[in-house]
Length: 152
Image (cartoon, rainbow, N blue to C red; front, top):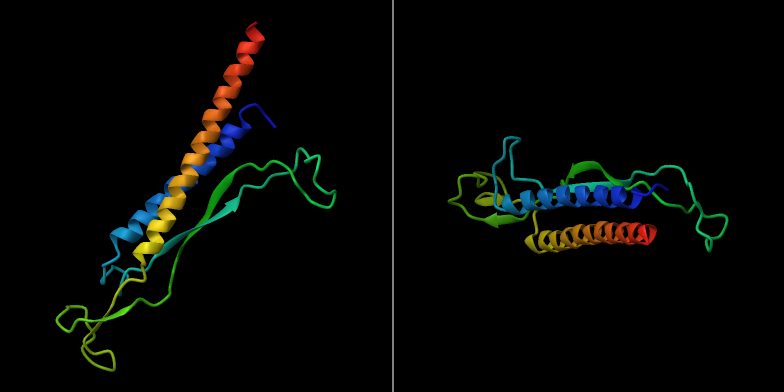
């Protein structure tokens, strides 16, 4: 594991959390959008993450032998998916996107965005970003201390 590996790993985490924040912000901004270019109401987006993996280059001294434990290489965005769960039907007969006939006449399908869940996810992404920034700051301080010891 190289000298700057911890910084590189934390940087991938910060990059992913910034993207998650952008996607969550987009979901919140479109929480009332009933008409999109694709047709129909806005559908919530979700970021799927995966490990960047890599080979195990060190073993944890206290881990059982059957576990493949070692430092990773960071995290990456696997994909951004669309949540296709149906939206809430709201009765608004004067709305331009209300159904004009059938059993849902007068109802509008609203986006499947729950503001409370989005705000919770936004807080989690923000805290994860801060944690990765703290890792980078700690690594910088550790490197500075090591250089100070080497100079004396």
